[in-house]
Length: 358
Image (tube, rainbow, N blue to C red):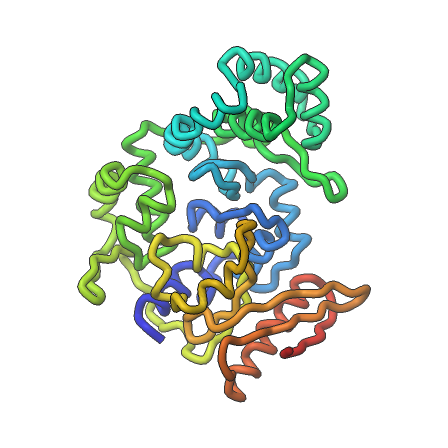
């Protein structure tokens, strides 16, 4: 296992698992990509020993974690205490970048002002409404939601800090007011927020480069470098293969087990938390992870720190069928470790395990 993989498995809490609460995991990493809801629950759960899908979802319902669009216009989960300063720091650049698309859709400031007023009034008092209900609400006030207008309006209001995603209602996700969902969210001055985000990122994702950090946050490279400079007293530098990497000041005393196998969800930070993913994924295997143009990613099999296959689940009444498709041949020990990883996932779901290799 290469040194980068070993440290990342530990620092991302995949191999370490040093926390006991979902909110601690999310705060440690800073943010976790979250457009695949069930995959997100497992992304947190695999970093907590003995967790269940229900216990992670409860943390969302208890509002210790919030699901919104803090960076890159991409859905993430963040600790509720952190959501306000992250949005204040990162969302304005993304909103400016999407101005052209809003013009194409005919979403002007008058439309946004009216939408703020309508949505804010409808959700007062802790109310939550599904996306369909939000669209109907806007429509009833003369605000068109067709042709992607609706989701762009709601996304804009979320990035401004008015809305966030609330609880699930059956299979439907709801919207809520961020001030109701995260009333204790902190604010920070921009420079302090940049430094804090840099410290969180490099501690929870390191070893990583400043280019990785700039990509992950959606900041300019100049802003990322200034943030890193402000946080550097809390980090250590390492030269690996001619590149400068940064990570937390106290590398874990142990190495990640060389024979360890992990089943990660498709949008896990272990792969998507970096601009350069070559340390964990060979370029020739990238099309097998991301096979189409729909933006979806396959769940991954990690062996010796590197992505060595994909897997999928099929839910049955009392069991889950886990189908593992390695890119090459697994030896006996690796197969045993893969079975243990699959058993852990089944336990997370509260189901018995069926395992197959196609």
